[in-house]
Length: 237
Figure 1 (tube, rainbow, N blue to C red):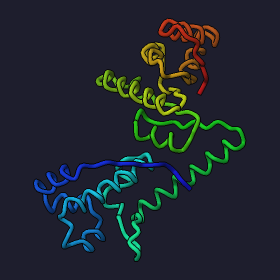
Figure 2 (spheres, rainbow, N blue to C red; figure 1 turned 120 degrees about the vertical axis):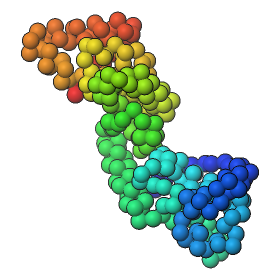
Figure 3 (cartoon, helix red, strand yellow; figure 1 turned 180 degrees about the horizontal axis):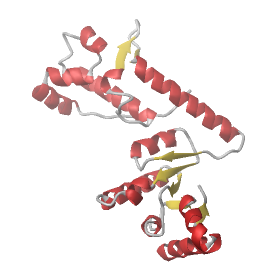
Figure 4 (cartoon, helix red, strand yellow; figure 1 turned 45 degrees about the vertical axis):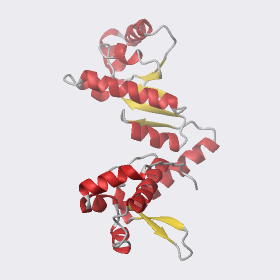
């Protein structure tokens, strides 16, 4: 099963600079224990280090995760078969993570085979959206809660939303958004042109208790339409 493709290009001179500056600290950060033990005599050669470094980078790109809490440099070990053919050996924790991803991949594949669209709810995080892209889901819904609830870092949270929506669109994912949206926060979110659908349920129903469902929906609709002269979907989450 192919979960993704990863390519990485790396100048050996860049690695040599890091090696000259940090030496053993850099090696221990990048190489697995097996690699260090096997290559004690040549481990400090920049071309050897660059080869392994690029392999690890390409691998996490193929997964769509980047280096994270689940997979670090040392979890990926470049080894060779008896005939010299290279292969990647993963640590136990990395293998467990990969198995989970394969399960999700199979679920998505089965659902799509039965004509069911799959959308995944994610944080405004490029790595998470990249994983969704590799899983071949139809869309992502970006969590807007931090932007809606955070009073101190609203500009920062808003930029995260924009960049995430742009990244999703660029990777052919339909982009939705939801969670914590109110009359006060919906305008700015609706201005992000890459978002094609807003999922608003809790707030609208809460307002409907006092003014009725029709008035609650129409008021939200009006704010959205004023933010963008384009039809929008309104869904209850």
